[in-house]
Image (cartoon, rainbow, N blue to C red; front, side, top):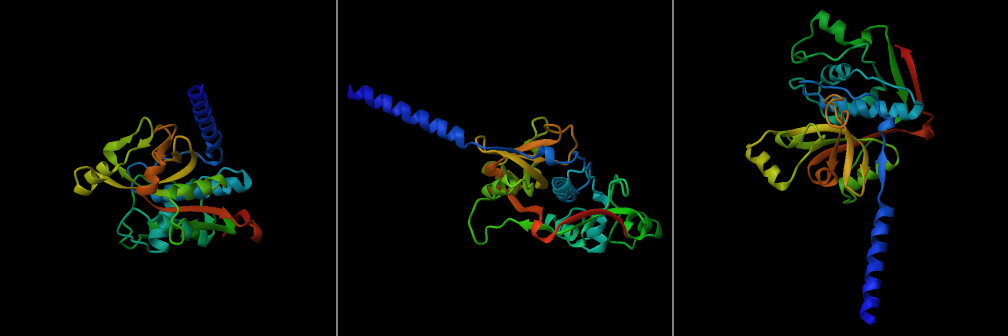
Length: 276
C-alpha cells in the first residue's frame, strides 16, 4: 500500500511540476510593432539595418505610424559627418545608434534610396556625390524626435546573462539589437536559424570556415523553447518571411553589444515631420 501511495505521490509531483513549467513558460512576439523587412544585399551594412529597424520600431511603438529610414544616409552620417572608420563599410551598432539619437532626426528611404554599392569614403566627395548624399543641404522633410533614449545592456555591475537581460527589455515591448557571431556554413536560410557551439567556434578560430559578426534585431522569445525571434536584413524570402530564430545559449555565449531604445515619457517626447 505504501508503495502504491509513493508512486501516486511521485506521479502527482511530476504532473504538478510539468504544469508549473507550462504555466511559467512565456512567449513574446513584437512583430506587429515592426516595420517591413529589408534587404542589405551584398553589402556589409547589417549594423545600419539593425539599428534603423530598432528606431523604426521605437517610433512606431510611440505613435503607431510606419517608418522607412534611409540606411544609406546612416552610412553617410557615420562615415562622413562623424568620420567613423571611413576605410570600411561596416558600422558599429553603438556608434550608429548613438549618432542617430544624438542628432535626433532621420530621413526616409524615398529621400535617399539604398545603393547597390558604397562609394569610397576615404576620398573627398565629388560635388555630385555631396549633393546626392548630404540631405542636410536639401530642403526636404525629415522625421525629428525628442526624448528618445538608448541603453546598452551590460554585465559590469550584475553578472546577469545576456539572454535574461534581453528578455527584460522585450517584456517592456522594447526590441533589442544584438551582434551575433555567425558561422556561414551553419546558417539555415530556409528555417531562418544560426547554429553555434564550442566545436563550431573552434572551426571559426582555426580559419577552417568563414565566420563573422552579424547584427540583427531581437523582437520576441519563447521561454519554453529557449529561443529568440529576430528580424534579419536579408529580405523577406529568408527564413520565416525575413525573421529567424536564435537560441538563448547563442546570445549568452556568442554575441556582443546588446542595445535598445525607448522614449523617456517623463520629458515630453515629440515626433514630428519638419524641413530643416
